[in-house]
Amino acid sequence: MKEKSLHDKFLAVLEMHMGIIYKISHAYCKDAEDRKDLIQEIIAQVWKSFPQYNIAYKLSTWIYRISLNTAISLYRKEYRRKSSLALEDAAGVHPNLIITGIETQAEEDENIRLLYQFISQLHVLEKALMILYLDGNTYAEIAEVLGITETNVATKLSRIKQKLKVKFATLNSL
Amino acid sequence: MEMEDILNHWKTYDAKLDQSLHLNKNILRAIKTDKAKSSMQRLMIARSIEAAIFGFFMVALWIFMFNRLANPEFIIAAGVLLVFCIIGFAGSLKQIVLISQIDYADSVVGIQKKIEQITAHNLQLTRLSMLSLPFYTAYIMIGFELFFGVNLYTQGNPHWWIGQFIFSIAMIPLTIWLYRKISSRNMHLKWVRSFTNGLGGAALTKSLQFLKEVEAFEKQ
Image 1 (cartoon, each protein chain N blue to C red):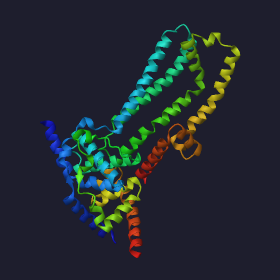
Image 2: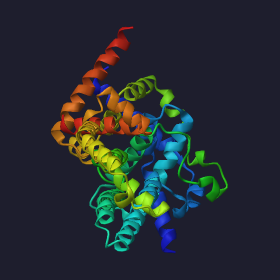
Image 3: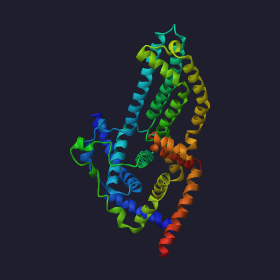
Image 4: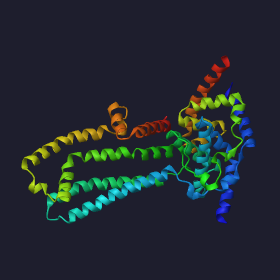
């Protein structure tokens, strides 16, 4: 019964934060299949960490941290399509269908597509910074997720924004 | 396009995502906790095996020494190897503690640094085994005693012993030099990179490079 209630809470949390997981996976994986696998891996990590969730943190901060740490770790390992969570075994169904309706959104808007293209060219940690910034997090929240100072966040964001401005200016002039 | 416009585009996109993303609860309900095996768990197993191997040799060396209390030459030879085993064992235990502290819900920079420090463990093992090079005679002595029942100290040719002694002494400066050179600080040197790559450390080189990047990201 307890397990069931935990699972229900987990599903509710996941449902609320699917967007974060999706955007992070999109920023770190160009390939659609890898992206689905990364989503699966992040969900597995969230599930594993869920019983230890510390209420001292905002739920979104907690999800950002797990998602980014998972994405960066897999990205660093030159991620091969091999997920750690045996969902096929567990459910008897293909695991790539955990979050559906995801593959058309990014491509619909040309600016978003360009933005993802820009993010994909950033350093692995700068990608995290950019996603957190675009999602409207404050410098303090970004600093908390990444574990750096607010001043550092401000300095780095200013550089990235400058690069972004140049990128869009160049594209507009074409 | 100004930053303000970009942020507005992103907000719209975010709202669209919220509407369109759908969580397949039926699949998620089937998740079993025991099915989730992380790479950290695999590393934990590897380090535990490593600690067990060091532990085994520690015990074996103690027994070897205990059974040869009347032969100080064996006590010294086994004692030297025991010191290396204890250092290796302590290193593996430290790794196990580090791995158990990995919590993906901690800050990104902190966790990524810890993960890379864990990956860099192989370099420490290499450096440790390198330090034992001048003491290679200890391995030979113990090996001959265990497998052939020959005490090289009493039965060995004196000229052979003098040769071993000179060679061991000559290896000390080389060992110290290698120990200092083969470190994470010197990955910019081509031969150091080649050396660690030869030991299966291509991933290690990348890890150390990433560790530097994380530290730079933290400091700037």
